[in-house]
Image (cartoon, rainbow, N blue to C red):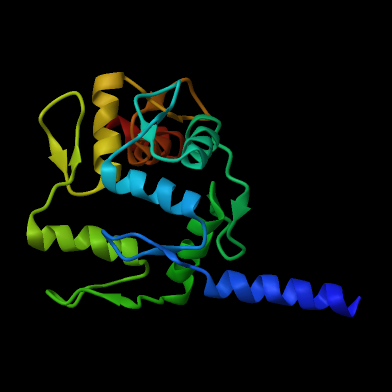
Length: 193
């Protein structure tokens, strides 16, 4: 029993210490060479995993699986205990919780805006640099934020993944669906105007 405990302890200790596979482009480290190999696909722009239902491709298989669950099946098993909003990924719920705490630890050095997530700060910095690294594969448009490009791609694919649960309408963007839902909640006298 004691020997087994020592073995588990050593394994945990080794996992903490052995992040010896380092990306030369961004200095991120990994404990496995396979993890580094997958990470390098991000820098290379390599996206071998394509969605069979829309035009999106992914560098990692797990991201395709998550995309299929969240976008095409609408599965959102992670629910906020404060406001009941649901998320497809646990990491998105964790990031969302900062909305309730007001925590914004990531500050822009150019304009003093603060953000709850470092990835949001990185996207914001492109406002200052003018960088638009997300290119549409169907036309010459470029975008500073990947979600803008994904939304734009729906112009080309005709995809309308956001469905109204009260009628047969569907929409390309979630914001358009939210606006549409007001049609079902406002009194008819207000809608005639």
